[in-house]
Length: 85
Image (tube, rainbow, N blue to C red):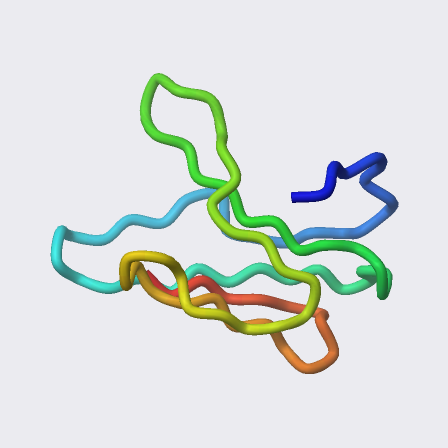
């Protein structure tokens, strides 16, 4: 993945946490209203006791996640994205 040199002034809105039971899907949405055309959309995950790690990244395309983990949907205007797991 290309390195991110700066995190411009993109305003991100997302619920601070969500939970579900094992075997039940979850939809995690994120609003990034003033994202610039050349900025990547990064989704991170963090396991208990560990630091965050990149889970998936895209510029504008929705995509399936590896190992049938789910999929990432990006709105046509790139103002929001949703991770379905």
